[in-house]
Amino acid sequence: MKIRFLGAAGTVTGSCHALEAAGSRFAIDCGLHQGNEAIERRNLDTSVYHPGQMDFFIITHAHMDHSGLLPRMVKTGFSGPIYVTPPTRDLLEIMLADSAHIQESEAEWKNRTSRRRGGKRAEPLYTMADARAVMPLLKPVPYGQDFSPAKGITARFSDAGHILGSAFVELWIKENSTQTKLVFSGDLGRPNQLLVNDPSTVAHADYLFVEGTYGDRNHKNETQSRAELAEAIARSYGLREKVIIPAFAVERTQEIIFCLHLLRKEGMLPEDMPVFVDSPLAIKATEIFRRHPEYLDDQTRAFLDKGEDPLALPNLRFTQSTDQSRAINDLDGPAVVISASGMCNAGRIKHHLRHNLWRPGASIVFVGYQAMGTPGRRIVDGAPFIRILGEEVAVAAKIYTIGGFSSHAGQSQIMEWLDHLKDGTREIFLIHGETKALTTLAGLIRDKYKVSVRVPDYLEEYTLQPGAEPKVAADPEKAWPRIDWPYLLADTEGKFALLRQRLDDLSAKPWTDQTDLRQRLLEVNRDLTELLSEI
Image (cartoon, rainbow, N blue to C red; front, side, top):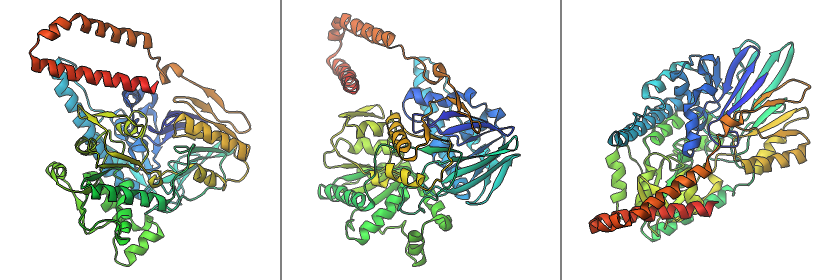
């Protein structure tokens, strides 16, 4: 039995764990790599996935970092079944279409720019047609029901408590008359999260693959998080400015609406402060939540049983069209704006940040994880300026980072989930986290449970054999291509030398042209200052 880590190994995005077992080749999850350009380039390299040789996929939940590469797989040769829970099936229908629209739009924008420069034509990662082609392959299976995707393999979904329909996967694999159990946590939810149930637990695994997004920290509790959101609302309401909340369209947006519903009941959301959900995808996702009440928690169902919709507010407005979205920025006075994407790297949130990030009275409230290389991460890390839609924007708004809204388990909650495991686990692999979070969590697990813990690298492959130490094979040159720093620095220094040689040419240009060029050079200078501060 072999497993190869094709993503979410030392990073949070791109989850895909490919296995060869019992004569089959398959993978748990198939997510988009998200972050900087080098990380996202991994999406293009389908050679590491071998889509045409994959027999099936099992998808833990609908977030794009776990499922967003499926259309690319279908486009490049995959045609087998894809096992999901019923809510995941419904969410993928809208989320893959939305992702494909983004891919097509980005390719179109690159081509407009490229044509002016005489460059090559860019192709989208996948198209709307590719996304539609995924849908007939989806095979919904409810929680707790065993299914056999191939001979010698039995699987089961259990509630991971992360988002609607999210699951961890139990696999029983029989090879040479020996049965081995593997468990993949998917994304583990945070107990007491609004809307969804607490994560189910598992009693045994020979090999456990568990996420560690927040392996080095704990979350604030729900009461503190709600109070902090109320503080941001009160602050910007008093200053007659907006509260901008970048939020994932699925789960986080709905949880924030529920939280605002509770704040209004407590008198902490002003009646005259409109709340906008400015994400067509989030609007569609909210309807899917209403369609699956059996997957919601007791608190939510109790609201529904009383005829009270926790996903509704008197001052809640859903904006579908781009004209409606633009009108929000023309609105004079305070408002709460919830918009995607949650990491600020795509979608309408970019426009809201461009219009509000520079305003001292505005509040930007981050309620989810910000991956390396994303605009959201740079804002959270304290960047004084952010480039948004080609414009350099000053960060003058008050920035709130409220970890208690995370739909990922914190460090102590991961450990509590592991407490349910009985003796007999041979190996724990920590995935879906940055290196610091994973190594911190690994040390805690080793100390408490006295079990072997590994933190795999991207593209590492392990051979798993009962009674034997896992054998590891790596491909470092492909996984971590060497960055030629001396060349990059020499090239940059060369361009500055040319600029210095052309000072007379600069001075001879019309004054208005000189001011434009000066502004661009100042932006380069700011970028270099920010780069030096991060080294």
